Image (cartoon, rainbow, N blue to C red; front, side, top):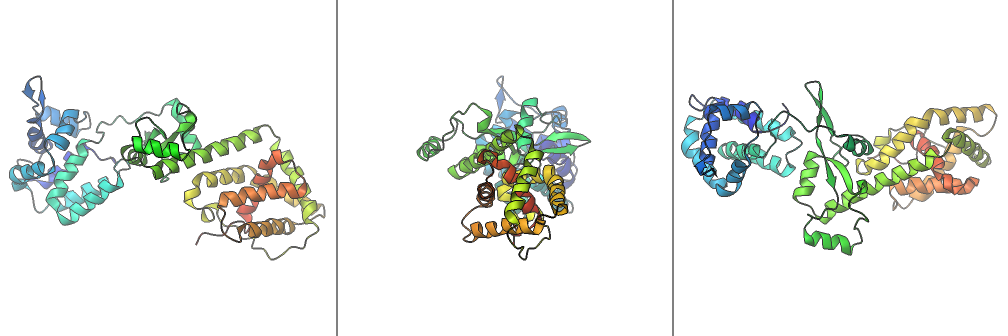
Length: 402
């Protein structure tokens, strides 16, 4: 199992103890009995026996909420460490404990649901204070989902997953994984603006004019990996809010552009556009142009993931058709690919000379420039964008990222 929880902790750490604690039940009862004394249900302390521990060890039961609260609030860090030193540490097997802790930490570090700050703390504890690592990794496991029934993908979630191409738009972690030959959902659908945001943050959002028009629509939500979702929901601030809102706006812009295309015979429009572009470019001489294709991901940084996905989509759909149309124009004795590409490159260099525009701004400025130059209807500018995407793929429109 690649996720971290109390069952994983008990399975691995039993190997770190001598007889007495060297079983899931023995180790579990020692830890949980201490916590159970601080939890009263029905007038009685919460008691843990082999059966209860076995259910947790085998991922068939969650840790009771009262226990999580006891470990975090009533008991506190130092008390738990003191209890570990007094009650449990004498049974630690010095020959195996290091291996078990290292193995446990690898799972912690690979779990997408654990915040990066917690992972960094665990690394530090493992190096500087192994006893504290054992205690703090136990505490961390209490709050993690333990049962094997993973989140089921709802039909309503599919549009949110599709619009980010199945990757977290913040960290690019896959939102759907595979475990035991079945899909595992590793995402949360997060409301960007929510009434639960801190009042100070809501005031700042309002002051800067970034309040959404309607918080009860899909335009206020994003699919994020569990880690990024937890990072935002647990500690929201203005920068995180602005970043998510910016991603949402890019997605909405892409959807608007696609809606424009839906009403067009795109291939026919591309053909007409290329003919007009051909006639415009024929009067120029081809310059020196590098025609060695560079992958799009090497030209557009990951920070512009939504824009990159849009360009990649157009290249995937229309690259072959545009290539064939350009070849036909060459066969008719008109301007060559070099002539057209040179004009696109010249325009790109003019726009990019000061380096003040983003990749996306340069891209759409090129699209509008081409429409204006050849007298193509501005309401069909998306057709020009598809053609520009072809040249981004094929020549020096955008440089390779250093």
